[in-house]
Image (cartoon, rainbow, N blue to C red; front, side, top):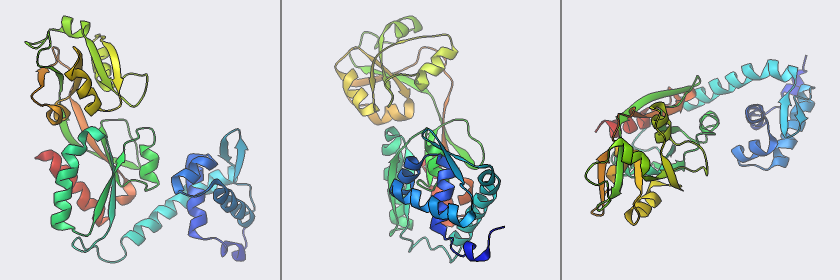
Length: 302
């Protein structure tokens, strides 16, 4: 049993660091998420060990693994912290007209031109003192970023999720093919010459399967990717001067089309692409974020 005088030494900052280390299981990653130094994380855990009279975490290589006592305590403690956040968020009336909140949204740069101008108009009209930050979408870290409140919501294609992450479908889209106007396949490619052509793929990774290849492989089709770009705007510049094909969602293609390019249907039936809105369940009753999610959903329904 922990003495009452020891419990009085606890503060929310210590518990926040504990919560983050329990999730990240790495001192450096915890420091990065919380924007503090690794030594600050180490010092906080040392204080907690003294107060709670337990090692809490034991190092195994680069990992900090919870002790049995930590495993028993952590889920309930983290749940209480979430409830405390909800209570504090509900404290005071939310006033859309006066709020100076900064909203943080993670999304792919390809849909920034679709979302950001319309969202800016909504803020200017309804929440003139508020601002927003577009954050680079990290599919590997999205769940952690939502849980740690580094981002308020994320927009991405359909992906497997589980509680405490919630989601809603924003839109359904289809693939099309962009090419230069004088491309040999300009009159409409068939599946044979489409697969035989050289393709440009967009991905932040040097290797690995991109979303359109996953769809093609489901149909037992395999194409030749000659170039990988980090974004669609670079891919556009590549295909303007080369006989390559760029397969992409039609919503993104509409942002890239100009008088040098043409769009054609993919010469096979590919599955639809669904954009989803993701958020953490702890913000379900946050009036500011409920309003913002509604604005984002309205943008995609237009």
